[in-house]
Image 1 (spheres, rainbow, N blue to C red):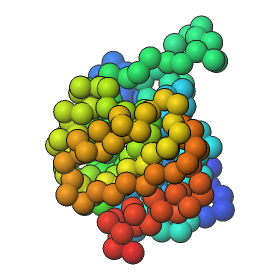
Image 2 (cartoon, rainbow, N blue to C red; image 1 turned 135 degrees about the vertical axis):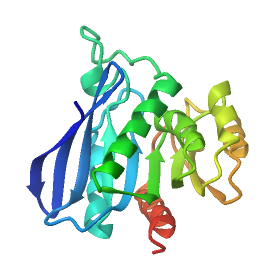
Image 3 (cartoon, rainbow, N blue to C red; image 1 turned 45 degrees about the vertical axis):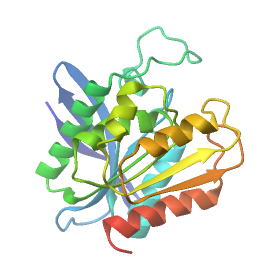
Image 4 (tube, rainbow, N blue to C red; image 1 turned 90 degrees about the vertical axis):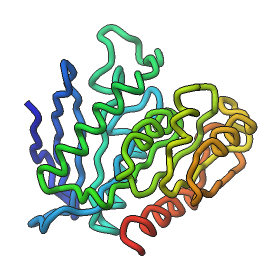
Length: 234
């Protein structure tokens, strides 16, 4: 049974445990919201982790809390299939989980968004997405299937997946795309090919020196400003 329960409330942020049931899958997640009484649905950012990550990765928690404290938004993160609490029993800590099936991810993210909208948490007209690396590979099929996504921060991903590239042609919301110039996993040409495949007429590219995921603090601020522009007009 899908449910939501408070597990921590401190420093202006209330953290909730989200338990989703999607088909035969149990999908654990976390929801962050402002402390105190809630006054209707609010802008919400769905944050997706990279391969080998999980919903409580420090970067996810840090961004989520920043969104709540600075903007009074909500933020939600799920463990992707095979990740976090959903890792296969007996798998080693250094063993990368398999890449999730896009259709399964779309179903789970959709169930999450629908549930939070039904609970009066999420404003369906102000939904943002933030996911880099594998978070982009999961996010593009979801965004393509859901035009209600108002804006997205994507990047650190290549063009090798035919499914992701095809779905990129159906992404029409404003997109901020991030890449590293010396990325050992994502060659420049392949990152640019995926960026070009995104159909949005409002898209911009931020490129930084460094290897995969070596992004400066200024990019964290830029992503926040980008989301704020389209979610709340800030």
